[in-house]
Image (cartoon, rainbow, N blue to C red; front, side, top):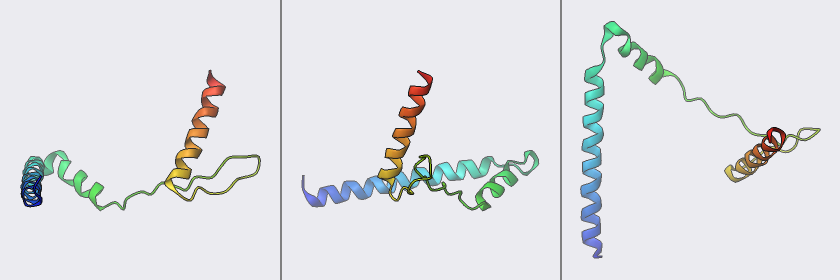
Length: 89
């Protein structure tokens, strides 16, 4: 595929996605009503800081090392699910 054509199609797609996002947001904002608390509920949730997930630590008789990467967290979660499956099944 020609690079110019690819860039043109990519930019057109970005423009269409942005238009769809703006339309969706406009419809959402237009549907808010201060009398049914939807407006205030939106303001309240938007103003809250994002909640971070706590770090994960390997559970051994004594607390193990902290998971430092997403891959280590996934491995620890896999181990946990395997243990829970053995206990239940």
